[in-house]
Length: 313
Image 1 (cartoon, rainbow, N blue to C red):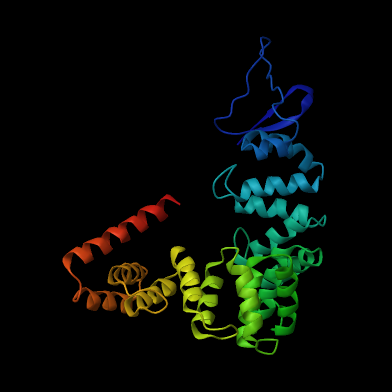
Image 2: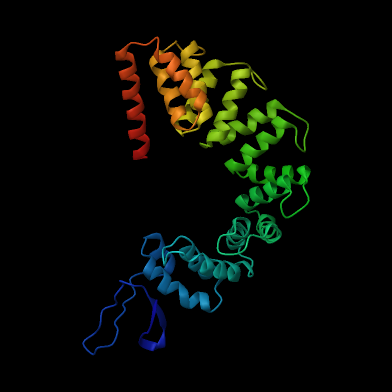
């Protein structure tokens, strides 16, 4: 990356392929296109966002430091720049910016751009969580639940999952439902599990949709309702969850909660098989023996349409 000194000795980083026009005098002419780096960032002009944010970041502006880190982290400045992202996340995190603390914790938690260190992850997740940052609260809860970076403590995990869940964090809502279903850190309650799974499921969380479907299917914590189970299995299956796809195969094959339909059963068994489920492949092949060629062709057509639609998404 080359450095150019502009008029008034303001330093800008020049991106490869980003040329600033010259005036008639031969000096660089860099008219400001945006009122701030945030405007440039929001409009996807990351070269300008970086150029405008960098001087502020170097003067200690925490928010600018955070955006510099984000642009490094997402490869909008240069590929493989996770190390640079960590440097700038740390600068902003040390000034108390919750979002930077969260992303720095993620780096330590995954070992991306820095050596994995669960204790450091715990430290920074805690700082962000204490400021009410919901994703950090969810991740802090996960560390307490797993015992990584801190002694395992289900009660503390429940505490932080609930704080995040009450802010609408779908991942925390799912995990809270899971802990209620399994009785971890709290008395087992299928009713509470249903409550929290549903909140996450309605936000599109595929695993929550699957677990909610199971509870409707079995009548645990809620009145048994095959139609409602079918609804949530379908939502999870449409997101590619293999267990949901396989279960739909069984439901259509047996006519459970839905009219019996060999074509749909074949389609879902086949999709599940493509997800690596050997049992689904065997069930599809057994089913095929009692289907006509036309039915199998139709099932394969529907399967191809499904792949086409989901590839487009």
